[in-house]
Length: 294
Length: 294
DNA sequence: GTGAAAGCGCTAACAA
DNA sequence: TTGTTAGCGCTTTCAC
Image 1 (tube, rainbow over the protein chains, first blue to last red):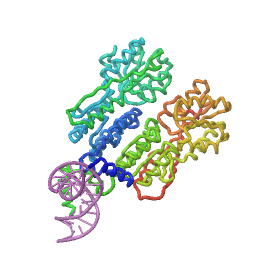
Image 2: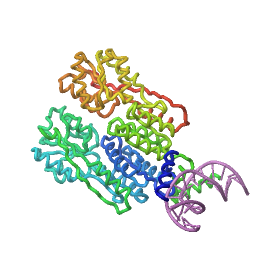
Image 3: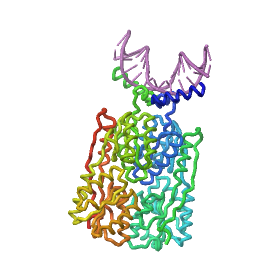
């Protein structure tokens, strides 16, 4: 076909309003050009930013995004994965709900199409793209120590969530008092409760390192109620750098994940040639705000 | 086919791991069993709850959700709509970015498939499912008046956003001083600026009615800075009942939209028989918290 | 360089 | 009730 004819065909297609039908294309090519995303819990303010990052990364590759939410529930996560698989997504991106509870679902899915675990991980049969939580905790501890805080406590969430688990383990290993750890859930209330408990058990506490911003926000609130000056007496650090960290009074220091970078890497693994499971760790960045700086 | 044979076929399908291929099905049925959703701005904390509600409503009908984000940008919204249309979604749900700027995009889309405007609206060529903002503002004003607040100010966002526009107009019509209106954008900073401006222009102000929780959070913060007691001297009300309203100190009263109900209605219009454009208004509910109750 | 034909997996219509 | 067939829109192959 000559360039001239090609041009005229294009022209005609334009005026007739013709567009390729992706169903026919899918059938023939055995590809849907769509990636499925299963989010652990869309009501957690961290995940919308992840969704957005992935959207952006996919748009660059002309890939569509089919979204599902697991509502923090292993059974619903399994259903969501099945639904997306039945729709023949070319690849699946998942933030697993639970280290042990999601493993089976993810391993089975990985046998059928490329699967990328993003942010959280549960199975070694699938790719993983996340943040280096050990390095993140180390930089938090270093920052605290340079501001004179040497008696931090860690307040985590459910250890079945891989991110909070990794942060907890790194804290246990590198903090001055590695056993000063409390675990509960991602919630404001837990942040408050844990703060009271921490101060009661370890009165010398001068910093609270939280597994996410929700917990950190609760910690800041409880400290205000208790009349403990932040950061003068007790500093607070969160994770994820969500809107919350900027809104809280005082604004909170928080570790930001390089979401777009991670999303691009995840898409590359999802859409690229099939390989053995890769593990990609990106560097986070501690955003310093008033809750750790007088 | 007898029930017995049907059962055996099902059994065989099960053991062989057979699943219908939606591509073939789509091609034959001329339907993708997928609905497209274009969100105005996923980083606005209100929208994730909308997405979740729609997810839930669609899951009940075995429909998939193809998601796109317009990033508050009319051009990106147009692109997103085109992309979803090219993928032959059966219907489109949109929260239009701008009353005038989104009209063309939505009207054109409505000519190709059922389109439901959710929460916000821009075109009368497509269905609309939203909240009755007039009734909402009236109930806010009534509540304020019964708590002795008779000099409210309205702080809105961009009047091109249909929700804030409707709230603003209702306020202008029903508030004691309908001209006490300031408009800016959905942001904390605007909430702060507007609060200062309101108190300067109308020193008798005893309540600030905000177009969303972000603005309201800014108002509460600025009042704290100015040393104005909330709610004793000035009460504050927001919209959307997001996480923010519970987290702010004091917790803020906010109008909650009946999201699931709206999502179910939207899905019914999207998946139901084609009809002339419908306009469905649901009733919101004012959630009263400390920012309006001493 | 161009055109024709096969076949992806599915369902609806029709024939037996 | 059961079995057969056509054709949805696309791309690839192969023949010309």
